[in-house]
Length: 201
Image (tube, rainbow, N blue to C red; front, side, top):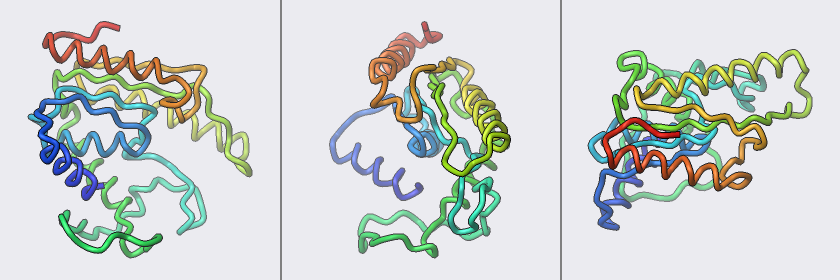
């Protein structure tokens, strides 16, 4: 993800897109948007997080063959410095997988600075439909869903100027299932950023 943040910054610079801009991050893209704001805060006017990944997310991990809090699988390895050039990645290489270590770094940064966005406007949109994955017991899925919902509400605390919205009709793929809601959230954040005011929702 650190590499993605670097590439995104390079892309915006090459395209001569002057900030500050509003970032929209869906799923893991929500972590990328937050990392970008941490590194290039002056370039970020506001954020929309669409059913985003939380730094303490629990997912089924094939490497350990169980549900796991991914950041707890961190090994303490240093994440490589982003590079402009190099061979593209081909296939999955577990030795080049730094996801757990990067989530742990986001977790530690959040502990040091609980509201890194300050007054910048932010909207968090959560999916209301979450069917259980095949083979997952009802009791385990209830617990995982409860924690997921708490985590999404927690992400709204990244800013003192935020709104939390549940899309009861959509699953994780909200941008495809309810693009009008995402567009409305973007418009609300852009409007609040322009006026330097609280979000109107």
